[in-house]
Image (tube, rainbow, N blue to C red; front, side):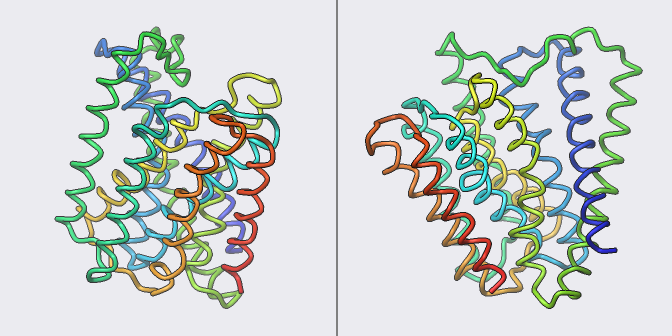
Length: 314
């Protein structure tokens, strides 16, 4: 039954996330916000809502390790699973913006998360505020850099949504928020029940199953694009997703309810894997071929990801 709750919960999160993105973009057009700003801010926040609802629900119910495992596991899956599989399908070109801007921000926030948890095992409201201010500063810099680059075209923004009626926007918002709420509730409860049934911690379920589940939409979109030989995946966008997971998801969750680390393995195992996956990207993009994420590089990080998942259950 717990597996069914997890599957229904993940399905509702995917549906809810999609409706929330659509309604948010359509609403932004109503306020005459530019496509670039919508793509860099509104879409990014909306696509982080499933992770936010899961982390918040878990924290409020006293399962802080699910809050942390959800974010840490998603960040690992974004690199090891999504980037790995997409690169195996076809080589990915990497722009210089990756190592000049996005990668340093991701590493800085990852180290900050490690520091906060190593200090007292808690992400306090003040530390949550620090993360939130960090994401605001990141977005301001991101928009400034994008304005200097005339080629920036936010693919995620559907221009057809400009003509959406107010009734549809409200209906989509209600569907999206409801699906996200009930999906997160079912997912958290299902994860706790499954962990008890198979004798592993909530941390293990959240850092593997939940993390993979919340990465499925991104993985599906990337694989479809790669098979069609379109621009499969912007590494910058993927790193941006990791930045949002740490700064906005954990930041907002901690402000509402401080996150207390329950399992020492979060600090001694999971975060170290997250940092490892993040750090390995830099040498990989400079190895032959430079600025190309080739199939063998994708294979290396995908194998590393399967090892991480296997070891989590040991």
